[in-house]
Length: 92
Image (cartoon, rainbow, N blue to C red; front, top):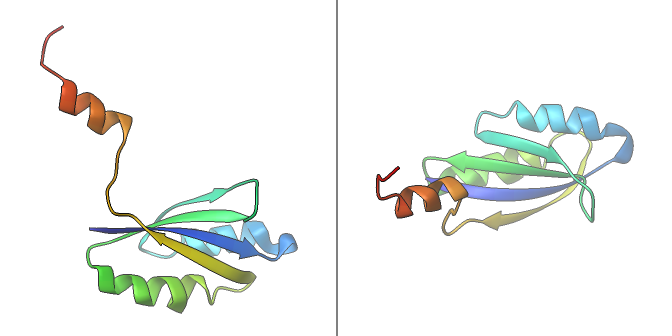
């Protein structure tokens, strides 16, 4: 599984439309409207790393209203659920 975090700079008057369009892309798991230097953050998950080349520059970056994207590839995923499971001894 490949996971990418995509920071999206959108035209201000089109942020909701861009978010809906990006969220409709099959491999996009979540889209967040955020504060800070970017307008949206998308989480993209694919079975194969090579698929990211089609999805990010081919679909997300070309979506109407998208001005720029910056992509970060995840090496490992950590979550409280994973950590809780790792330390669960089955005792109540």
